[in-house]
Image (tube, rainbow, N blue to C red; front, side, top):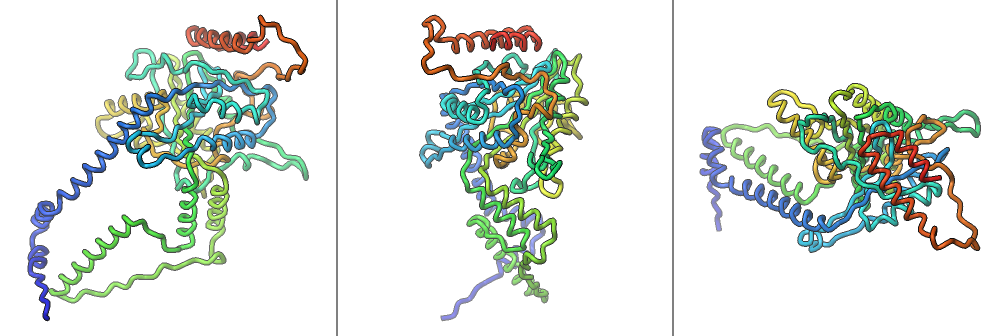
Length: 475
């Protein structure tokens, strides 16, 4: 039985002018491309719709954390705190994700300076309040945690605004997220055989926050999304790239590679009818042994392994500088914060940088004014909503990196005069102490007074009255 394959239609197709080839291809196969694009778009819209519906029933609260006076604990305590937050991670099956809209709830760790007064806050789903309080008290027994109203209430959401102007940006990483940044451990210096000193990188941020004037607000937000352990495989992939090992492709990538290879072989077969085609030899992947690695490559592998050894979270970093137009000092605040964040740059590993393409309030080339207003509105609304979807794709930081960029300042190494702190240490009462019925609910009274005081502070805008009244309440 003889099989005859006629390649005449293929030869005729490749003999057409490029424009006719394109139109013919789109006529026969273009609908596939548009169909795939439509399905992908419908998938995203459906997922957003069901998530929005489910998310409306989730209550969030904002907790103000007052650090103890004379804090001498290093960021190691905050690293342990973040590890405890891993307990909030949960899994969702196909039905829960695509039909009920359930998703992993996130936390927001914030440092805000309102008119020069600095406060550490944690925004959490209400059902995780006990988790947050247990994590903080386990590392800082003398800390005070109070639920407060959202300080963003009253901030403008739409620009241009008659009174306020805004600068903002999300920060992204300059390299793959498996390469770590410079951590707080690298800010420790040995003075003698057994003595260490810690140069707290948070001191620069505290100094910047304390220098703000009436009408200036610096808002620093880290969205933290608990995740599983699948990301550790990405570390192995990066190490394989350094060693020159062949990467294992996904099913979709293998399908695409086979299609491309088939088209390439087909084109060579067709063109070989008209003339000889030189054979192209594929060079085999060269593997590098550990002995052949450069010191820089060895360091990368070592730090990737170190990052993979600790618990990780998906993260977004947002910074907003909101100020009245008559007192706005963009050069001082924006450049000061970028200087602070550059402390964590390890140029041979990873670093943070503003996302100038998508989220930063900066435009170039064409239609600059309208695009700038859109960016200002987006960054401000995303910050106020603590949106973990909008903006840049979340990247992964482990608990050591998170504790580096968000921790309570070590008082011995930072001049944080306007950072809210607890006034006195708390001690447990004797077991046989009898309480009067009239004062047994003193904790709820203090909390009500604090809420009222914070409301007055937001109305008057005076950090002095705020600090003094907090001291009165604590006494």
